Length: 345
Image 1 (cartoon, rainbow, N blue to C red):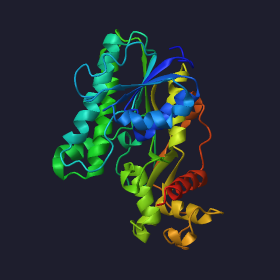
Image 2: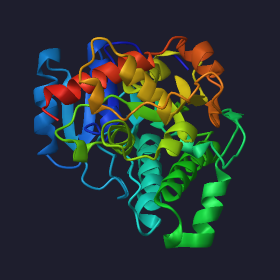
Image 3: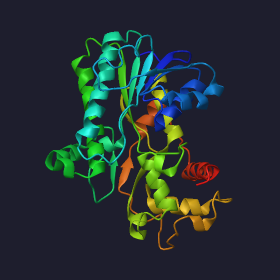
């Protein structure tokens, strides 16, 4: 499929979301026109202020209910590409349907609208997550684009409301991504666009009003590093994978630009144990905060021998999207801390 070049119009759903704001910024900086969907007109005020220095290429439209049939019918008309990012991201759902239903229905809604009215669309990019790939493990695993988190779906089926909050979220991402690929397979004779899904891990860096308003990943980072929310043992043995949100945004933009982009693409800087971040913030010189502001470092922790359970093969991102260098953990930590400090936290 031909690449979508600068000057084209890109629809970004959930445009005021955490990662979406950075995608919008990157698109505007590279010369695209952006049509962003928001749930209410009031949510657009902040966006217009943030992007006022990037000209008049941002258009905001209100889509109050992404699950409603035809919700995106008008929004897709005349756009050349779609980046679908509107989906709930939190671990506080009681009923699994709180996460699963909007994730699936929102995804199918944008695809159905694109099928019916997106006559100019060349590429649709959907934000999924490495949460849709992983499975429980006690030994290190390198996950690839072929892996699926069927374990989370099964656990939600068995435990329903009693399943852990993060498992409900994992299941929502897995089911929504599968629904997208199933839709494309079912309608492959009718659609005129390619589908790409971008699977990032923990997104780092944010701009927000208070720690309590942070997205789930950044809130956990803030609490672990500055509020001692994790035990010393958890710091040394638990973790995840991560990527700076600016690299994640770049991947979304590259996914509409590169003709050969297709299918699922994993974007991950590296794996970590929480103590790796502790070591990094203590190594910053000069430091945005006094060293005693951070969780105490354990001298017995050896990053060279530490076991990190979740790892991801990012060969496809390097080959297809040209992402072969990621923002460092040091830079990401410094930028987050300087933003926190500037806000008086």
